Image 1 (cartoon, rainbow, N blue to C red):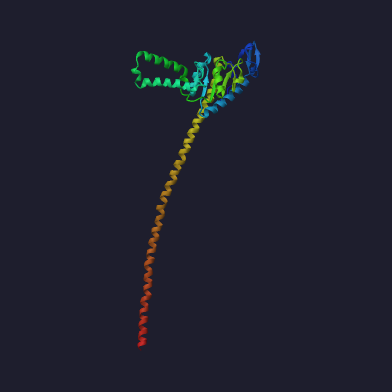
Image 2 (image 1 turned 90 degrees about the vertical axis):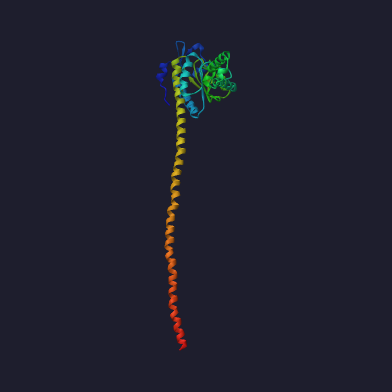
Length: 302
């Protein structure tokens, strides 16, 4: 995981906070000093919290779970949509619909309705509709795609949520806290960092500041996804290797009995002459005994 440099954050303007009169006292630990009525954020703490958040998000991505990115403010929406598309994660950049997480079943119904309209255009049903019905369905599809198109692949509640500017996205933050979903957020000097599980003190108004934070976060998520993919490939290779070894081991066992049968036939051939020789040896004494009996008879006759 690449480490962000202090100089890069400084040049991107990450250290600029809000005016002193707009600050939140809970941000005091993250403020370095006040300069010309503007609070300056301590970039050393920004780096530490950014690394901590990146490591946590990397582990979530490695486990195969989804991370929802939320940023509807003008400065951040284009950056979020561009960066998050590369890592194939859900995001919300238009408008946070109330109950998007707490009433997720209704959100899924809206996504299925959008899919049904797409199916009508492919299976021929679209041609049976009149002009007015087609216009109504087209407008409905555009509206649903604008609000839910970027989360169409999110089949269940996300494992974490990343927010830019928790004051503007307070509804999303409340829903995530209610569902006990881990929250990651870029917090400025006018925000309350205690509301977020993993706060990243930084300027949430400048496009350069948001871009450099998102580069680091998305890079960590991408690394987690790559490690997950490599682990799956290694597991497949290991499962194939034992199967090949078993096939090789079975081949010699099948040939072994055929080679051992040859000596058995040789033993049978060697025993055959012994069996024939035995009767020949027994017959010889029988012929020799015959003359001995004739001599006894001659002696008795005399």
